[in-house]
Image (cartoon, rainbow, N blue to C red):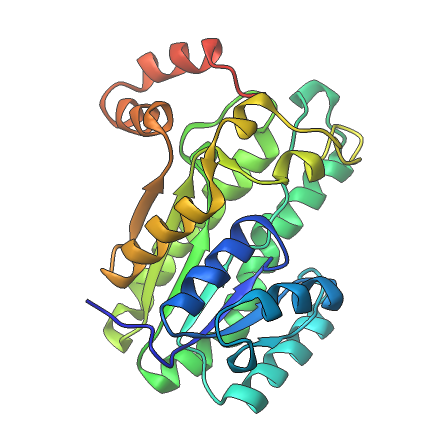
Length: 265
């Protein structure tokens, strides 16, 4: 099994929620964590909460601003010299029916959840290829495997990054670079508060389904453990989400009927 002792792990969307929990777990495993998100002050709060805070750095960037992302990448290499894991976690959710969602909102979700992940990966890929080692991971979603009400654009973006990652894996496997995709079910974070409504505004309240979801720390422990074992397709969620993924493979028509009855808000 792989070890994270002394490895450099870059996590986007690390100021809260899943990203923060992943940072804590990676630090516990001995990694040097690079924390990225838009707000430096929030990243610093996370950094000083980690085990051995002086081993970690905060690198602020807007994931949709290519110039900022390039600068952040240069800063990471200047300070750490290498990248062993990249965890593409930054993302934005959605809570709106298709009929109520503007095209501007559709594009905003795709920009953050798909195109920004693609750009960052393409930027850092030469480093991984030169090292002939490393792991690139993507936080997709069970919604990207199933598709549910109120999350059409989000589901589409998460499905897109899954398929793009599959292609990347096939292209770089012979170069010693590993690619993993993680599919969270309902995880108890503030994702619902920031989820966009049809007009592109934050929903600003919690969903019942998210409130009753897996604790972020539990999700992080399961995810990092699976990554250390070299797993490439990682579903982390409750029984309903795992059942949905299984049914989607065995009987898609049954799944479609199940989804219509599911409580997803």
